[in-house]
Amino acid sequence: MKRKSVAVCALVTTSVLVLSVVLFAADSNIGTWKLNLAKSKFSPGPPPQSQTLKIEAWGEHGVTYTSDGVGADGKPTHSEFQAKYDGKDNLFKGNADADTIAYRRINANTIEAVTKLKGKATINARAVVSGDGKTRTLTQTGKDAQGHDVNNVLVYEKQ
Image (cartoon, rainbow, N blue to C red; front, side, top):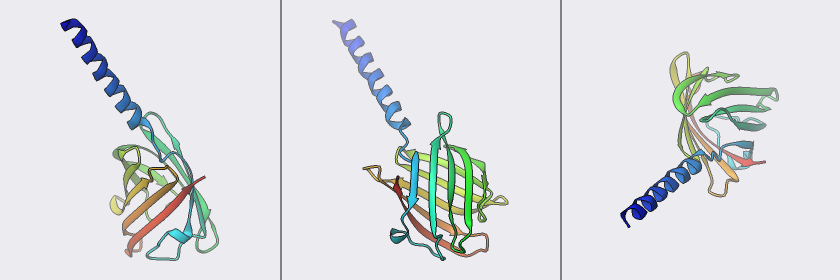
């Protein structure tokens, strides 16, 4: 009887661990996201005319991020990076306010990021994907490259 209970206990423990890994591995940030300007707030403005994010899984614990759009001035915009969820700085190309970004994953629906410009932190960001997976809300606070306070809430819809 003892052997049977130990075996059942081991099976339950293994099942819980495997389920935990599978649940944590699902990253709801992955996908293509379009900025909803009507639901977003930009301080300082003006907002971009459009923006689409493409976030793809990279390796076991990271993402490849590409952003394309049209800036407030009507010119095309493009930025990109690859980052693991390890809190370490990664090269951030195409962003006037940052040259590196560090990503940390809080859970399957939430990530935190810190951008830096020339080694100095500029923006703290938190992205939260809604429970239904249809909306991604990015809250940004800090200073831009010109030293202006930034307090943005960007709302994206999954495409």
